[in-house]
Image (cartoon, rainbow, N blue to C red; front, side, top):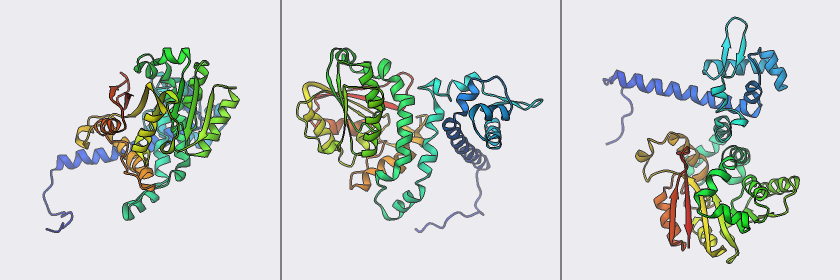
Length: 362
């Protein structure tokens, strides 16, 4: 039976209409706040305000080296969003310490303002994604230059800040092995933030980073030169075409596997590259096999949006399966077994309900 569309003459549940209206208005305000929080992060306004006593818009703009008129309008958005306090008597603005704990670079890995950058970066390719809705296919990774920069910043704010004390201990014995000295490969290393950090922390180990994007590798190499790191190297290489055999004691794949257009080839290549006693450490998204199961997740709508606009799309653009970020641990376990991994341990961090870590051995 063909759909007749919405009929305004039908009786509606007014309470349900009111609830959904509030939900959508909240979504509009939330999206606007995310955009302005991204600007506040990139412009350094949250960091500046966290170091100041209550101040006028002129003083805040001066301390940040920014135009006062734009800062004043940004402050208005922050005040009406409940992020910044304002004294009605003297028009002085302040960032509560409790809010600064979630919005400043000094608060990493809790800096949500850095994560808000995803919203404008994804919105910038909306037209390209809409074309995919109409004709299928995907959007090439090269289109996501701004998003790659966001990912690098987010990596520094979240992953790097937790690597040493939280992530590495998930793999039993890995920290001790790195201290003694091992060979570690990071596939899909991006701009190399995590790998350069590890190279500085563990001078007796040797680190290799593969990424198919030349711009990412150039950035990674530049940072390594600046930090005078002699135990790390980077190469422009698609992880699906690795030729390494028994070359590494550990391989890390941080937010890569579900994006790749040849997922199974990547996993088989990693299996060949690992030495017999080595292991693979994957960071992915904690999710179930169905949206209804993911509804309780605090960031489920955000994660499905990232999946639709980026993760799924970049895979489909290359003729891949388009697994998407929400491909589930069940699918990951099945593909790891097919790639030759005999045991896989699933772990999560206590304060991170979004990330899932898989430690796989052959």
